[in-house]
Length: 233
Ligand SMILES: *Cc1c(COP(=O)(O)O)cnc(C)c1O
Image (cartoon, rainbow, N blue to C red):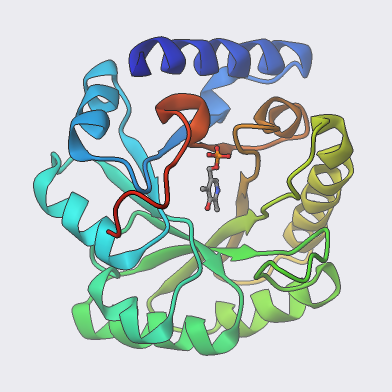
């Protein structure tokens, strides 16, 4: 089932790329495996997935230990400063940096472990109270403040769009994030690239691809519904 789902998601990404006249190589699917057991990740790996997304530090570390080492792990969830030290040398990309304080902690641990950590700045484009992320207005200032920290490399921006019935309702937010990334790119800030746009989930990734997403983060559409009640990981 997972392999069929993956095939379907890939086909839909391809269709959206065609529609938007984009190269499908410019869009990478992240299999969001949070709450899901190892055998399910293995099935996705067998199919060819090498990018996995997790939102909890402990779970990411546990899965990192047992899964093949060529996997690129994406930290997509809110990150507490006291847990940064466990993942800086394990993650390929942290999508959820939304404060200078968090970035300073990542920088400190990166320097200690002699690594460079790739990060995205999370923007709460829709300004939902329940969500983390900086605002559209403050994003450039935050990017500038983070850009001077050692051991960190800013690769782009990430947003989590609202939960909606009709994915078209989220198009406006994807457009805004892309516009912001172009604006910031034109500022030519040292140590900042805006190559990455992480946007789109199961409900809206096709619209996100049409609007320029380079990473889409799909969980339910690959692994099925999550059951948060079942196991505390
Ligand atoms: C859980 C999660 C996803 C995947 O959500 P689905 O709707 O299951 O595809 C994507 N991004 C973030 C940040 C998440 O926490």
